[in-house]
Length: 452
Image (cartoon, rainbow, N blue to C red; front, side, top):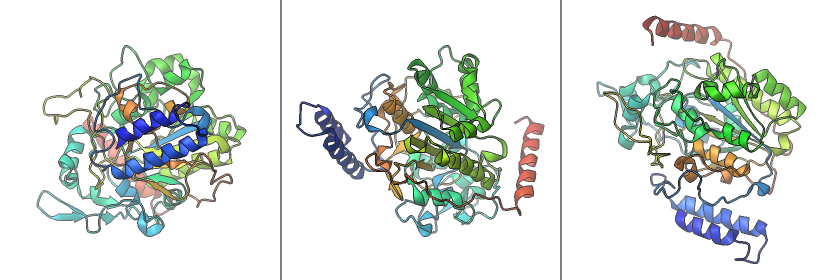
């Protein structure tokens, strides 16, 4: 079906092929795309074949002149799965999202059923989320290895009472319920896919070895004269450790969160902003999720109040699932390049031909479809592809060449949020502030003691 859509797209976008306006052509193409997405099963996704390579891609449905967006922002938090955060969203206003069936369970090592259960603290313990353990959790698509790979904490979820701001975002704007991490592994390789379309063989949860030639969306924007900046609370950030040469050469592009808030207030947002938190605000277990929610709310509030709001799209997502349960088996994907995973003795064999576990992704924009759920298969390179499409940039790898940009989450002809919506205040429950801080300190002190 997707080959059919691609063929129709080529024909329709040929200005000499049909005597109709571009607006009508785009309407037809969008309808074809939605129809094909509906007719294609999740497990066989758009990645069934991989004919495109770096420098090539599927025909863009929209050209940059048709996208009324001048400022693209990515806010990426850490380590939460879709079911872990939005299992109860159907009961709180959005019945169209796909969540785990009632009475879902995994077996522990003794054969005991561990059911999906509401969390009783905002600072759960850390679950394993590196290559070997994630493959054990996925269990060939059965999604029944989460407890044996980690512990009972993997089978927990939060509801609206814990994260009301996030539930309000999901009920107001457009949410994707088949958005996956790019790699069945941890933070570092997944962030590399988001900014470069590949992890270049890296699967470990640490900075990759330096490469002779760095390439990323930041390099692409720099080479074409587009403005960009990395706004981070970390020093150093993930991104500058992934791209040390870029950081050395373009240090003025690496800014603070306070800089972002001030720039948004003045209406001087760059073409592309990458925003990442740190410390107690990044939501990495055992951090307090409400502290992370408060950070994200601050960023989104600044964007909605900015003079740039009317021409802005913000993508809010998580780098990976953090070892927490999700019931949707990751679909197949296109390997980004010829570089195989750098495996050590005892590592689970595999390739970069499957996505990671499902994570939340919400689009916040005046043009985001109101109260909408996208069921299209996406991963981090889908956002990368959107950025490239908007600014007429080539693809970096075979992965982003085949990625579907999340255009179905927008209505570029109609602004649903010219006036930004009123969202609830993101607060921290004072009962848990000290508990979460003590838990986090104990965990990191223990890791330091054992040299982890």
